[in-house]
Image (tube, rainbow, N blue to C red):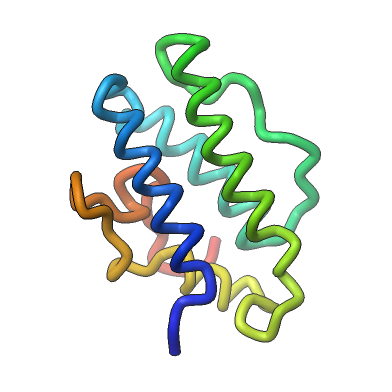
Length: 122
């Protein structure tokens, strides 16, 4: 079965890769843990998200704003689809997000590079 968020996930990873070209800290543990927590809470568990936080652990306000914009686009494009058959349980969303076959062409980055990895649903 095709990944229901493949396009959105790939696009987000590609944009985060591009940000990482100028801002190495995007791969730092603090940033990765915060971004991973947002995805797990709001996409995987389906908790309500009013807005993406303004501070995401990047070294500058400009970098935080870039990452925030990318996450906002991702959440906007997928959160309204949580009732779809392919995304209607946390387990399905967890599997779709942690799809190691989706990697960027440039940096060969997958979800783990920016969001960390869990062996099972947290």
